[in-house]
Amino acid sequence: MSVATAFRPIPPRLAVPVALAIVASGALVLAAMGREWICACGTVKLWYGGLNTSEGSQHLTDWYTWTHVVHGFLFYGGLWLVARRLPLSWRWLIAVFLETAWEIVENTPWIIDKYRAGTISLDYFGDSIVNSLGDILAMAVGFWIASRAPVWLSLLVVLVIEVTLALVIRDNLTLNIIMLWLPIDAIREWQAGG
Image 1 (cartoon, rainbow, N blue to C red):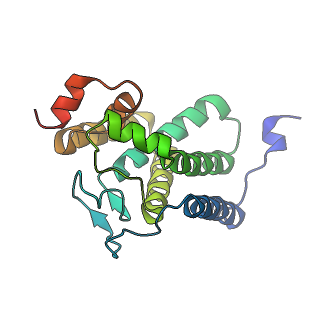
Image 2: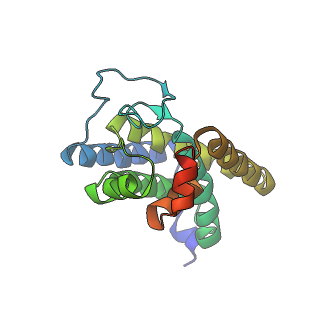
C-alpha cells in the first residue's frame, strides 16, 4: 500500500475542525501552564508595534508574527522535502500541530529564561494565549502562500521578511535562533543599538 493510498486528502470540512481542535488543545495546555489569555494591560490590540516592553508578545500580532509566517514557509518546504507524497491537507495539519507544539515549548520557563539570558528581550515573559493563537494563524498563512507560490517567490518573501525585520527591529527568525541556542555578544550589542 502506497502513502498516497493510505493517506487520502482530507476535505476542508474535516481538516479545518481537526486543525481547530489541535489549536484549542494547545490553548488549553497554555492556560494550564498559567499563561494569560490576554495582555495584563486588559486590552487586545490587533497590532502592537512596541519593542522590548512588557506588552510585547501579548497582543494578537506584533513584529515577531512575521517570523511565524516564515515558519509556515519553512514547514511547507520541509514537509515537501520529507513527506511530499502525503496530501497537502495532511502536511498542513502536521504544520499546525508543529506550530502549536512550538507555542507550548516556547512558553516554558526554560525557553523564556533562555530568551531573557541570551537575547536583548529582557522584558520577555512569554506570550499571551491570544498572541500564540495569532502566531499559529500567521504560520498557517505562510504555509498557504508557500503551497501556492513558486519556489523563487517563496524564497524572495522569506528573504524580504528577514531583511526587513533585521533593519526595523534588529531581529528576525535567523537571529532569534542563533541567539537562543548560541548567543553571540557582537549580535547582542548590535541588537541593543550599539
